[in-house]
Image 1 (tube, rainbow, N blue to C red):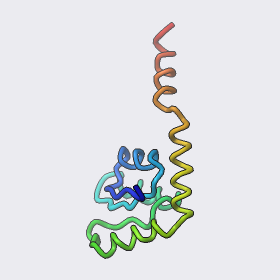
Image 2: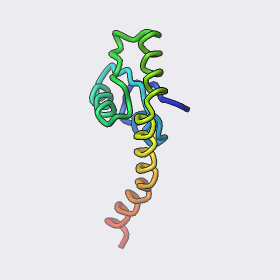
Image 3: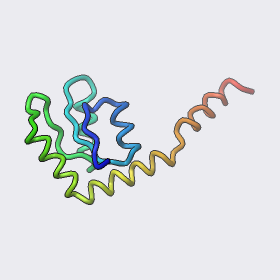
Length: 102
């Protein structure tokens, strides 16, 4: 896939980053504005779209930006590779087990 379009929740944001694709984010509540700005500053997302401004034309513009911006695509691929290489779940399990298994 070329991009992920989503609301910017922490879980969806993490899944999109792990997949290594840029995102178009339409935040509307809670932590979503934070994550949408974070991805924009990381260079893996164009400017977020306020949900009150969402239209087919604006969404299409953001998707075209992603398709044309090779550096955004490459940055997303790099971050995705780093996240997948972390083996985060295995490390977390080993850490937790280290506290309880002697």
